[in-house]
Length: 477
Image 1 (tube, rainbow, N blue to C red):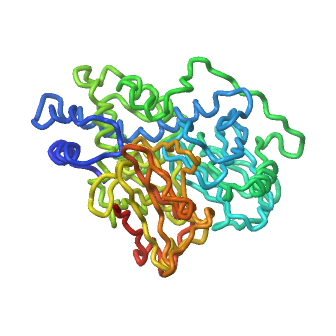
Image 2: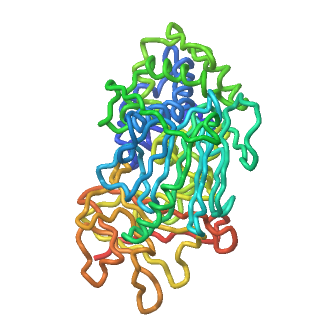
Image 3: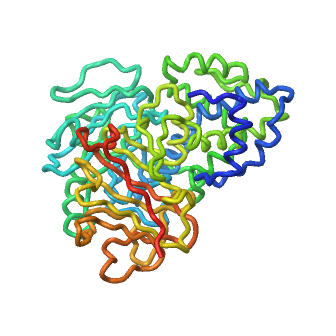
């Protein structure tokens, strides 16, 4: 979708002024763009280019932070090594927005520019898992896992866009569109000590090594640590604070190893006007200095406005969701939006993420109130994998709470009402011992809810065809 200049300025200003957006960005920079101004076309081309490149720049900044260690430590690990999260992330986690509290991640960053990388998956013994692979533009180009390849042992090679060669017998090839690849594996775990131990044993059997090491013992080298890398500031904030020249300079460098697709040619032809050409260094002399400082802010505001403007986003019972994740084509605004609020999102066949910023009455959530989500008998989310509801603060990070519960799902042994319905209690304080199994703790102020529907049922009822819809959260008391 290409947003018109008029919609971005006139419509956008009204939405920013009157709607609660899931971003701390301000609306004021748009006010000066309500009327034509000198160089307006160049300005809008530059903001288009900013939006176009937002996923690639964010992926690179995320990679730098997550791999800036000598050995795997916590949520981080060097390039070419699996990071095996042993427990769910907590409220201090800031590497990725909208983190998952339902699965144990097994993730790695690799560069397939020099040679392919081999991935070995053990027999998962029927346990639900998926191993989506993201290219540098955040497209999920392959998804080995329970839904697609089953849970048996399997070995495959991830090859680069320019690679041609012969792979060992029995090794399946997955060709990456870019040199940068993020393997973002997820393994379902109930969170009990016994289940943690079972998943840990599976994680330890995953293998990752370059093709040149196939058939021999391989010990990964220590990672290079760059002391200049900011390891404390959230990646999204690091990206958003880059000035236009620094941003486009980095984007141009990244596009050399991570080429845009052929479908991007019309957009790239426009971007050449401001000095951004795929395969070349950025020519900053073609970017007007008098408005370049405003490009990042307007670019981010346009991205976040997609909650209201993109027709691919449905809004049902206060839940906004889309079936356009994982593969974006030329919908650059949607691609950038998902990058900003849920980097690493799956294809809809694997997971859908209804997100709610308002209750049944259309009001924003406030921890001073109490809310209930009721699933009538037999109408819990229809999934083959699992479902959950996660609590986030206004910036899409976990909320500290006394029971360290960041999401709620059937693994909490939810109690049903006498009529068979299930109530989820959303509030700051405990609803009482008899209801605590169904309690999703909220902060004292504003918050956001996200539902995760993994491997949604493709038959009726299904969210994929609209025969099932998420129920609204209703204010009570």
